[in-house]
Image (cartoon, rainbow, N blue to C red; front, side, top):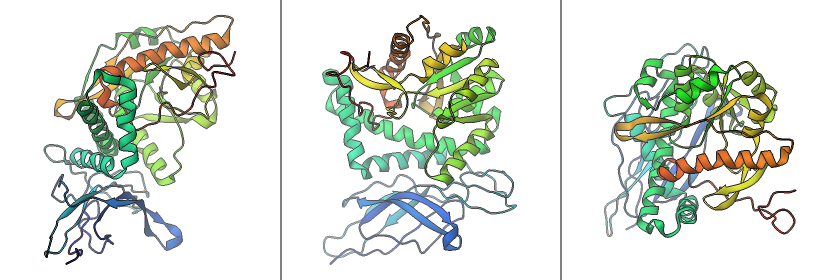
Length: 403
């Protein structure tokens, strides 16, 4: 007897909902957003792949609200929910379970709801489940993560250890997304209470010079929470450089989450003027420069012993402004707490040879980033294709950089 769908469900900001279309024998992972051309109906983006005959139920329960924001007539809410397919009993009966995760943006005028966290952080539990399911659904990226770890660590880690680190990486990305969605509903006191931090001595010394501070970080741990925490701890306007996200509603939601925590965004495509103004004014500017971004000006420097295209933006901003560069990283710790790691200031060299300075200074801060990732590999996004851009050694220098 074939398997047929007997039940389906979704829970989130609008309560339990029936009538969701479920594909036979498959779980889904995706996003839902309102489409004005469809009269406000929700359109769904995502992927669906077979989950096999066995699955794992990460969380059973119902949450009326996971997050709410109070931004005037535009009310944004996030939903992470459970989506299950239960198959009929018969010859070779089976039960298939999957997690449905994503978010919904609901434009509900003059409506306010209270966020529900509950003991043990159910929002983070859902986020963790979302990350783990994503690692199972997106097989190509899961294999990439393990392959990248093998390139980085070689035989120093067993295959089982590499698989464990890759799985933890996906899990951390999922709960970091959930932590970001919680930001608009969290007070400054709540954010600070979640974090243990190293001494801010390096940052205080740099800021005392009055020329601004560039906060160097990476896509590790809950990096959005790090920005919010720094805005609170530093006690001054905090800006971060980021790229525009192609999916407009999510881009707006992320910007609103940052603003609610006192963080303003400067877009990469807006040029360096805004960033330099922040630094010249003695402010703090955060940047995540650990990804392969070929459209940005960069050079090849080693990352885990392999040449990786790396943005020269951080070093160029510090060189042009006279600001100091202080590395800050954040990691997930036991009890779903966070640790902020504050490292010594990175020395930026300024000579008459700007090109060599760009390579040398970028290499200096890239070593710092690699050092943190090497110590805490489960915190980083190993599914990212860090070595995607290849150096043209035959045409340029031995390190792939044009002379």
